[in-house]
Length: 335
Image (tube, rainbow, N blue to C red):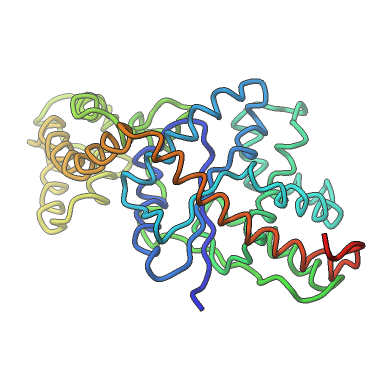
């Protein structure tokens, strides 16, 4: 039996290069080795977008197009829409009885997101509870592995806590999931030099961006503000262009020579930006072409989502039968 992976994204906008480096290319690499469920997490997206459900609806297709464009194969990976599996919501409700409000408020990932979104004390209850929903997402498939960035590790730790408590109280039916963290390139800064590439910050290079748009974003990238003239010595550390080159440039020896040249002066920002542009265009062009092809047949993409969601729900229903049995609430077992 193949080990199971659960992964996914919130459909709050199309996916970007940060998603590609942090998780998408890893999903492509792992899909032949593992049984992979890929979730479009619309319920989680609604926790802080409840007033704009149309935004979520429109972006479900955008996220699916990005999945297909990067090479996630629906014949071997199961795509599904979170809200179409009511069993996840049911399991979330059971898990909420095993978690305290104080524990949720201590979750570092949640604390950071509350700060970033400036909720103060006006925190939507659904947003505060989404680590519990995420635990249900993972365990409804009894996933062994969950690909995440370092900033999401507290979410997996909380899932393990819930699993241990459930298994202790009711019976050993759930696996304790493990986080699968990228060895390198797990977090890509925004083109403006901010710590993280983000849809909400508007500092992202999207997988579907046209070639000229990508070039414009690269040419406007944050570098060393003190590198005013080509002859000036420049700083490599914290220079976003070099951060990207470290990830995308395969010629490490030549790259180290460029860094040394930049540090001593005589190397312009435009030169290194052009090098980066060539590299990123080579990565993005085939993705862009595939995305455009799938976008021309949206009915086929919707059929992929529907078929995958049906397959995922069969697994979720089977899991909930086991859950209700060990909790002794399977009052009408034939239903």
